[in-house]
Image 1 (cartoon, rainbow, N blue to C red):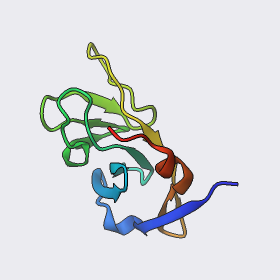
Image 2: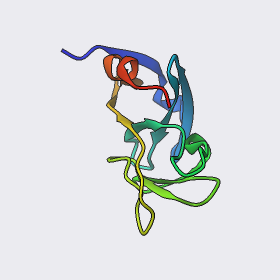
Image 3: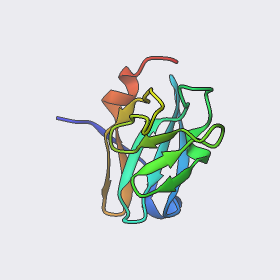
Image 4: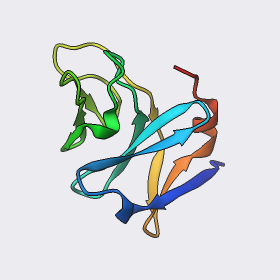
Length: 111
């Protein structure tokens, strides 16, 4: 059984935006799409460590604010000619609250 932690209200994250959540092992970017889906990814782009929570959300993708790498919010994989990926973490919305998988967050490795 998954242990979910409440990180805040869905309304705290703007549509097509993100918020950064600090964990013991580093920061996670939590994204809200235009259709109110939520996704959680490692906040650091593997290219130059760009803060993905400050990127541009479009569809189910985010563009890194530093060098325009585009990542799938669903898989964490870089799209296009670039290679690389970021870790993804289970996220869901329940009764208007954003929940993250506590066990997966605790198990993540330090970058």
